[in-house]
Amino acid sequence: METKQKLTDEERLKLAEKLDKDLDDFINSFEKKRYTDGWPEDKWREEIDKHPFFMKRAPEPGEDVHPMLEGLQQLKFDPEENTPEELAEKYKEDGNYWMKHKKYRIAIMNYTEGLGQKLDNHEMIATLFNNRSAAHYFLQNYRSAILDAELAIKHKEDYTKAKIRLLKCKMELKKYDEVCKHAEEYLTSDPTNKEILEIHKLAMTKKAEILRNERKNQMQEKKKRQEFQTLVQALIQRKAKFEEIRDSKNLSSLLTPEILKPKIEPLENSSVSIDKHGVIYWPIVFCYPEFQLTDIQQQVHEMETIHECLEDMFALDQESPHNYKNPDSMNIYFENRLTGKIHKVDSQKPIKDLISDDNFIIHSGYLTFYVIPKDSKAEIEFLNQKRKPIV
Image 1 (cartoon, rainbow, N blue to C red):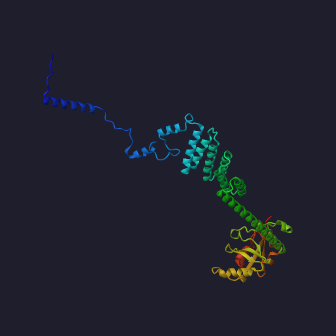
Image 2 (cartoon, rainbow, N blue to C red):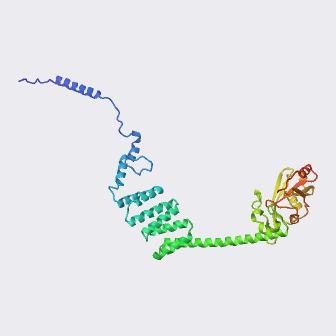
Image 3 (cartoon, one colour):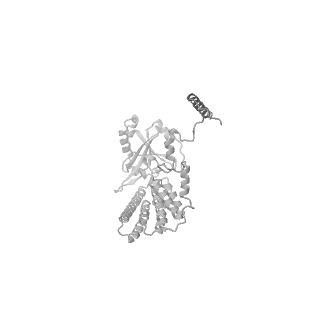
């Protein structure tokens, strides 16, 4: 038999060195490749938050869902793993979660899914309708909220929360008669409910306020009609004629507030009016053809003369040309647009007398006078203008 030769210490050391070198060569012979299957160093926290075991919030609609979470969700809502009532309960819980986070539209979707299950449990059905009514209420979809509240009450007649929400929605829609009717009906079975009592009281107050305002408006409208008829009769007495009304004999039936409303922006709210003493006040436009400018007087007493109006205006206007300082140096005209003719005015006559002139025709709801320096070039040009009568 062969006997093994015993290695010396030196030989043993050389053998160990050779084995170490062979191992290093073997390891270095593998292709060097960076590990890429882990999380990036700068995004590890974000990745952890996405993991269903560590996430602190549910993903929003449209966000990427972790595969494990997607699997858990499918398992949670798997109809083969859950009864219809269990599914409805889970959809209700999810809806409540989104309600707490004020995501009312997502909550509505969950409650609707819950109601889509084949349920025999009227308590659960009523709860889902009531919760969906609440979500609609916060979105100000008051009519949808009312429909859901009514369905909740249908499945659970003593559902106080649904009844109160129905009342609140109808208050928002200002259906105070219906609020009172429903509240009185609910109070027969729950006469001490403070919230229903308060809503009923508020609805009664609102109803009374509306009736009071309606009576007040009716009285105001009646007063306006009476004042207008008084004004019409006063205009008939003064033989006022209007371009919009060719049949002056039927002025009382044809004259309307719209005809008397000035058709020029600065005077829109200054229609001809009459005071309690029977005095008429007119809106007047003074035109200066020489400069193509105008002056406006909103309320002129009918006993005032054109001369007096001009004195007041010229006294206030310090920048007007020298020849416009004195009304006596002016000629005043009005135009009959039906005939296309210009007529000179006696500036010392009160406006009341000018209105009665057979040729004076009121148009656009205000009186118009043309102011021109006597014997001036501007006056000659103004009088020589060609005017076509209105047909």
